[in-house]
Structures are given as C-alpha cells and as structure tokens.
Length: 407
Picture (cartoon, rainbow, N blue to C red):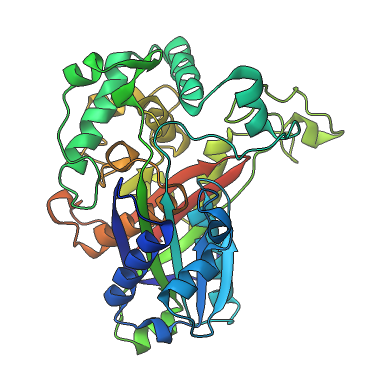
C-alpha cells in the first residue's frame, strides 16, 4: 500500500463537437478544477498534461501546451501519452511527484479534439506497428473488435443483443442527468434495436462516439490539503498502470493474433505467472493490482466508472472488476444492480455511451465523477452514501488504467 493523495479540485469542459482546439477544452477544465480547489494557476508548481496525437506537435507536448495557454509561470511540466490510459498515467506521474516530495500540489489536465467517425493510426508506413497493421491488413476499425468481443460473450455465456442494449438504456438514463454529457436523452431498448448495424451484433447505439472534451484534477499531499482548507478531501488510494502477462489467449485491440501458450519463456513463468498459476485476463489484472494497492476489494465499492466502448464490453468489466463471476455480467444489468438506485451503480456519469471518447481526458473524467460522487455533490445521479469507487479502462498497446478513490 502507498500513501493517499488528496483530490482538491475536479473540473471538466462539456463533451461534444465544438470545433475548437484541445487546448481550449483543457484550459477550461483546468480553470474549473483550480476554482474548485480554491487555488490560482500561480499557486501550482507542477503540471502534467495527458497528450493527444490529434493535436499536432502541441498535442505531443500537452503539458507545455496547457501551461503556455494558462500563462507561463515557471511550473515543472510533464507530458504523458498512453492512448486511452493517458489520464491514469498522468495521475500516476503527479502522484509520484507528490509522494516523492517534489511538489505539494499538481495540476493534471487532459483534452482532445477528436475526428468524426473512426479513430485511425497516424500516417506513414509502419509495418512493425500493430495499430497500423490491423488497418492495412484487415481494415479492422475499433468497432470490428467490439463486435468480436460481443460474439465471444454470446458464444461463451449465452449473452443476447437484447441484454447488451440494456447497458445503453442504463447509461443513457444516467447521462440524461449529467449536464456535462454530450448525449442527454433517455434511450429505449427498442431504439437500440432499431439503430443501424455497425459491427454485428452491435448497433450504432451499442457503440460510443468520438468527442471533444477536457477534464482536470488538482492533486496534493494531505498536509497541503489541510493547510488550504480541505480537512476531509476525497483521496486517491491506488493507481494501477500494469501491463499484460503471457500467455494472452484472448484477442485484444489492436492485435490481430493472440500469444502462443505456453509463452516462449522458460520456467514457471511460461505458464503465466512466476508462481506457475494461470494468468488473469489483462483487464482483470488491472483491477486486481488496484485492489491490492488500495487494500480494498469489490465488496467495499459504492460505485464504478468503466470503459464502455461498447455495451458488451461494459458487461465484461463487471466480471473483470470482480462484481460477479465470469458470464454473470448480463444478469447484473438485467436485474438493475448496476443502474442508478441499484446495489452497485456502474457509470453513474453516463459513461462513454453518454460522453463519447475524448481520449486523453476520459480516465481523468472518470476520477472527476468519483470525486463528485464521494463528496455527495452529484445531484440527481448521486449514489447515496458513496465511500469508495474504482475507475477502469485500458489503453492501446497494453496500458492498464484503474484508480481507486475513497472518502
């Protein structure tokens, strides 16, 4: 277990398609987070920016881009890119500075101006890049993988498209209560079933959009929090950024094949772990590391924010987080367990179903939602008595991303 750090401020720019630069969204989110913390930009000795590959060169140096837009004041600067895990990696970088005593307080910012339609790899010829290869060799956009994951669940567990649709219905109902969400309209299962097929069996309303948006956090040491009028802040207790283990027997984006089993290494690790036990799935390993670091388990959670790129993938996260056994995800959503008012709400923010993907911002946005829920200020979507929550997503090329926050 590591020491807690405090969340002093949380801020977001609303998600949507606004036609502005990523820096504009990031600056708006940063100013909101600073105001929430009761601090000014000149009070911040360090800034960490979650980078975007779609922002040109300024996107690659997002930390400096945000610092310049806020006004140069000499702060230490860090830029982090880990695809969809960029926000969690940025939090991890900020936490390391705080725990090392390099900074008492750090501003973390992520923002994106996403293209309309499918995400695609950067240009150029890169035959050693699996993201480039899956487009060039297979023409496989992200929804093609989402469809494969959904088909696998149907084959293994008997999940149905009707059960997948219930995830969208649940998340749209929560998103309708969130003023920061892009889509704020309840959706019926019939509407999901009537939307166009994108990657069979998934339809348009089963899959998240691409969006513009920004999110920011002000993180500090507990001592700094107390000195600045925050005696009982939300605290980040764990950040998981693990990578996969061999063997990988389930296809994962952007790969076009799984690893051989046993793995090509000798000794006990060839069976998947140093102790010779089978490896957990990558997503399950992300959550397991977060729980171990936090000293908590699934039974301690009040809520979760997960990476619902598709409705079927959200069901898989239920299982990876240990909320139910393998194959039990559909029953949770069918029984209302993960809806607002249920025993363990998942994506009370509305999730990516209601926001869409603004890649460097989304892991930060998840922690913003945990912060507001744990403070008890989430309004009509408030989870009563929330005391602990977890976020979970993953980034391309094996970047883990999970954060545990407590109050």
